[in-house]
Length: 70
Image 1 (cartoon, rainbow, N blue to C red):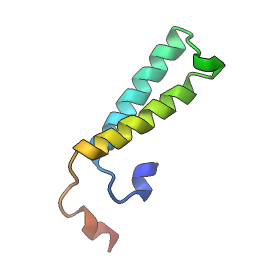
Image 2 (image 1 turned 30 degrees about the vertical axis):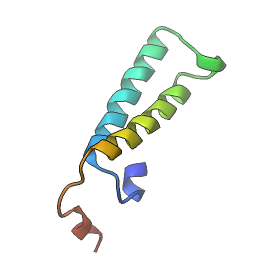
Image 3 (image 1 turned 180 degrees about the horizontal axis):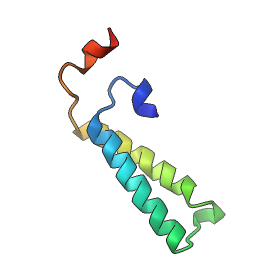
Image 4 (image 1 turned 90 degrees about the vertical axis):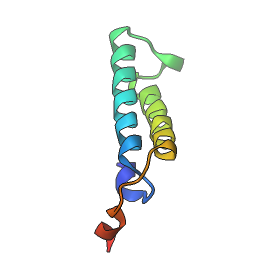
């Protein structure tokens, strides 16, 4: 959802956030691991946000994507 509102978002950030968040949630939920007694979705979302930011930092934006906003 953040990618819809942040103009510097790119596909690398979105894909890395989905993969990291999904895998981490699956592992935590399957192994019934609760970090600080939180539901597994909470740490998964936090780490997914970090993966999104890192992916956006090192990924590249698509040329011509800014013409869609005009």
